[in-house]
Amino acid sequence: MRILGVDPGLTRCGLGVIEAGRSRTIALVDVSVARSSANAEVPDRLASIADAFDAALNKHQPDAVALERVFAQHNVRTVMGTAQISGVVMATAARRGIPVALYTPSEVKAAVTGSGRADKAQVSFMVAKLLGLDSVPGPADAADALAIAIAHAWRGGAGPTAAGPGNPGSVTPAQRRWAEAEKAARKRG
Image (cartoon, rainbow, N blue to C red; front, side, top):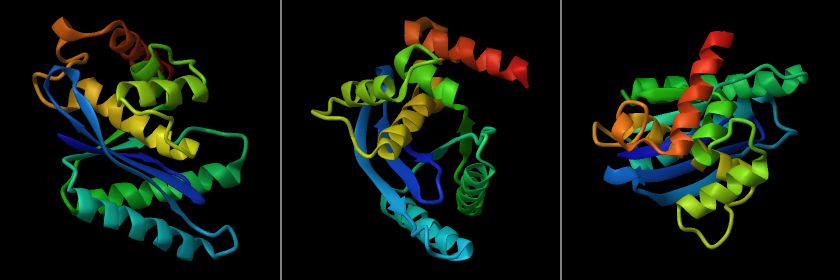
């Protein structure tokens, strides 16, 4: 299964593509960051990111899109831009019939590191390690997009033989902690 992970942002939007297979195998296909100018008008910025997302969909033909769920922040301007890009991504994928899965930051952290409270450095390090990369993909938006794609792969999105909560016989400790973090997040609301 090919998964396109998206770390939404109005200035920088991470786009990470992985191939997920049986026995928890994952491989890097591509990673990039779509950018828009902070000086441009919001509709132009949305169009710029939408064009980059469309190009990634055309180039990689993913089976699924995994997107970071918008969460409350103190900076309303930042959360608005993130929400707007998330809407563009969801609508574009839906028009193409590509399923979209949403993950909170703590769900992604738990899936990749085993701890829903991991910091960005730990997540980036694990992304590089899990994908067999010599260095951490940069900027952070790129590594975050790959982490989101990995979370989807290990959640069980890569099919019935994939590791994850849907296949408890092959769940790793990191995946077990991820499932616990997901359950706790649902209880909170």
